[in-house]
Image (cartoon, rainbow, N blue to C red; front, top):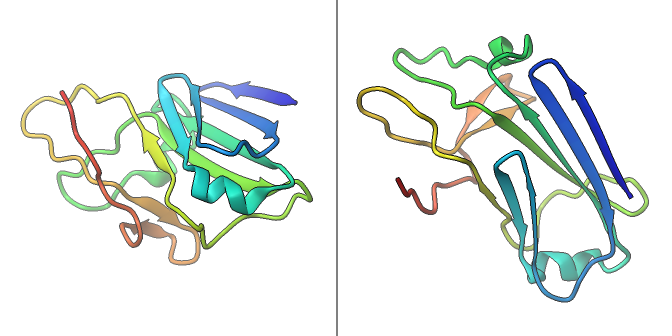
Amino acid sequence: DETLATLSGAASVSKRLLAPASGLSFSYAGVTVELPGALLQTLQDGFVLSLALIDSNSSSFEFFVPAAPGAVLASPMASVQLYTSDGLGVSQLAAPLLVSFPRPTVEGRFRPQCVFWDETQQAWSSAGVSLVNESA
C-alpha cells in the first residue's frame, strides 16, 4: 500500500512493506532513505515507512528556521518515520538508516551539517546523526 498527500510546499508519502532480508532503498522527490538489512531483520512482520518533505514554499518551513547567525536551512526538510505493522513507532534503531538529499545551491561558503528537530527541546540537535559523505 502507498499513500501520497501533497499541500502547498509539502509532500508526504507512506509505504507499507514486508521486511526484505536485505536492505531497502526508497526515493521520493530527490530524497532517498536507505534501510540496512540489520534494521529490517528487527521488523520481520512488516513496517510502514513515512517520508514527509517540506520545502521553503511551505508555511511550516518558517517554524524551523534556525536561530544561529548565518545558518541556512536546506530545502527540502525531510521527516522519516518507521512504524511496526501494528502502527507502533520504531525507535532505538538496531542499525542506522541513511538519508540522502540533493545538494542545495547556496552562494558563498557552505558547510553542511546533519541535524534533526528535537520535539522535546523545540530546537535543532545533532545528537545521534552525522554527515557520512558530501559530494558536489
